[in-house]
Length: 541
RNA sequence: UCCCCGAUAGCUCAAUGGUAGAGCACCCGGCUGUUAACCGGGUUGUUGCAGGUUCGAGUCCUGCUCGGGGAGCCA
Image (tube, rainbow, N blue to C red; front, side, top):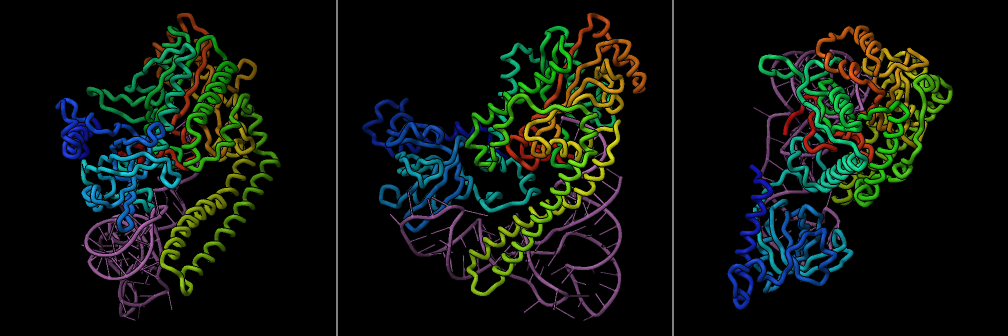
């Protein structure tokens, strides 16, 4: 259906040559090889417009939106690097272009040529006074209009939703985040090791993995590269893997995907403190990099950057046991009571606001456009109201769960949120009970009930972004743990070899890219942080 | 697997149990500085599916399907 980008630009070039032939003086056409250079206009992109003020340029892109007022049209052109308002006035010289643009549907592809002007009235601060326009490919009835759409509709049109400003911005930030991650490790002597996607039954919770028929044998899509990375770590000392990972958990929440990207470093001769120090430095680095490169983009997304600026070493730290005490404390009960009161107050305010708007809408003498605007505002308020009412219903339950938290169980989602809410920086929670963690985590020397692990909780309710641990390097203890978990040792013989031949203390962690990006961008849902989200009950497009 | 909410025009949403509507999109017309432009006119329906209650169901009841987000589990 959609042509490839390369084919698109070849066609665009060919069409432009045709256009150029028609428009420009034959006197300049001395060299037939030079067709594209005969134009006085420089070929450029919207992002580069600042360097071409006062010059004639040509842009190629897609029609983002168009407004007209009699003899003047405003064409918002999107070219992949930004948006530019192109102004087209009807005159003898531009009549053909004017008429061609008049019935152009949203997302039609086109090329325009004109004079660049600095103008605050135009999107992005620059405008193009159009002298020529060529339609490359017409589009009719583009499904995604400038008006609001529902999530279901947008997700079904993800292949087109990409083109809208918000999604464009988010995925550009994702690209920077991915680059920051790779650069961090590459610049510090880590060797990138690609771990396999097909994995035999790899122990911890095989029921949550996707099974694949592998020449008649059942294997699984990898949920971590860690065990393989441990092998690589004994060869290269500092390694990392970065790739997709798969979880078949039947979770339908704003934090879950069935296919997501995870980066996992692993370092030899390292203990838990080294691991946490690495995670801390790493997270500070990538957060500050995104902040440095995307201030305007984050502002466009409505992200308050102050909480991100606060992401500086050292982060907060507490043990699991301390967290358990905090959860049961009066401080947490009070905090939740206050949160509930605030939520209820906000709910009440929203309700009266909604009533007032409804009264105005259905009242006498309301202008049509005003009524429409009110309906839109009311829809937004209702959405916020629904979220808050759900929160208000949940808080008493969260309070109950926290107050009755018993040492030995894993922290629930609500417990993590509570711990994170108590701080304005990321929090490391360390030393979880061994019984609720994976067999490979290093047993703590002082307290055999707990392991040397940590979770890093992002602030502002974004929850667990990193899980990591020191690995059990003692062959005997590891075998004991595997017996405890009733794991068949046969598939792990190669893994046990790593302890048989020159075992050393080592540690690592995994960071989820989509959760991190949702946090950085201040998004409600991870589905917008990945190009094509794979979720429970959703594999298309 | 469990709990809560929802499904009305292509899209976003209205409609005391009583004639299915608006805005957008699209078509026609107007407007030389618009910012989700605006103004006038026009086209647009198996109210998710199957039953039930009722003189009468978009509205009430039951079941199912699909979607939303929460629990468990997780990054």
